[in-house]
Image (cartoon, rainbow, N blue to C red; front, side, top):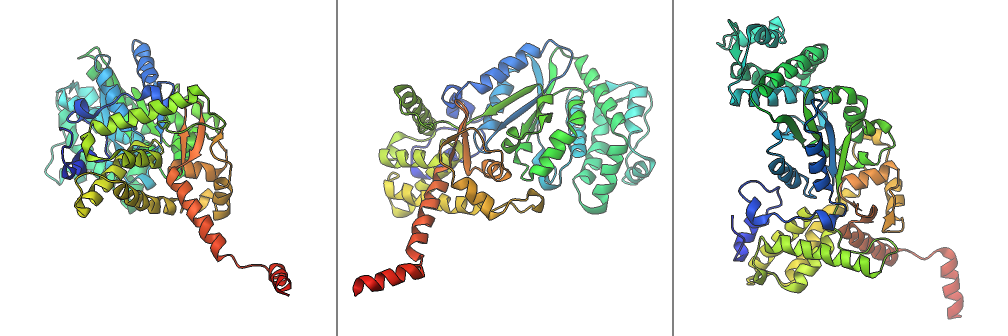
Length: 458
């Protein structure tokens, strides 16, 4: 895809979604240095270093939603192509995230392995094939037979033969109600055998290649319920760690700062911070100004790899960068909306007024995110949220309160990890300024103030 040369093309080139093979060469910009710490580069090096070991590793990869994690994981996949056979799974497209549990994750990983082995025409011997088939209970096998499927195994079988039965069972795993409860119970009762099956599939694949297997599980960072995320990653960490191949788990950023020591059980941990566009707390020296300048320069490179410079006025772009907070998805969304505004107004390029209207649109969305979460177990009320919002921003070091973590998870607070500091999203800050100004206007004077006013008149 080429960059936009007219306003109407910006809707495509600035679509806020991860880069893929089709868009990579034109749109990708290296941002490791301006994010601070070259986190992804270190993650890639670490995985290369441990590749010779026969023991699989488990990784945690976190960052704000929309910060570019999926794009950076695509880069990781490209750069580790010689060392690893990488399978990417978007679990949110298969299962309902609010109802997700660790058992569904384990079964999903087995399906990913079955699919890869099928692509490679891997064959199991008779004992391995029967063991795989015996994982399903007699009731389900009879149900499967009624769909005119053969389930007998003679003399072994290609793994592709099992794709259909695993896919059929997977449909039940993603269903709801009593069916889901029944199949989840079956997975739990036969979890050790499922792990053994995964190990046999991995061994069969490894016989055909020197690369190690690595699964990337996308979408787990989008778990909105922190109690659900704790249950999966902390309570059932042993089950996640026992998957017999290397895995990168995307991870909710709010849990990165959780006090539970269970996070330390995942040997490789990495966070992708925002791109810095403003000074950190208490800093105004030349070094800090250089960081800010480089961060803004990097964001402009991202934009101008997608659109011609003549399509947006300088003041409009500066405003949109300011209001994005260094969040790439928000910046692309703002540019896209501003371009639509310019089209409707009959402009040839994005003017400052078009950018201002786009900012107001997104600001209204952020104002809704300030509300406490829906889940009652979070035990967060509006007063807790307001307490966090009234802190002196920007600040260094995370507040360990649940309200802080909630605001961090939904992007109201942004993390800048080069120096580990935090700030309110600019659109949240703007909303609070407007809200405070309106509150002062409508605030009625107290009785004592009224008396003083009357006395002055006398």
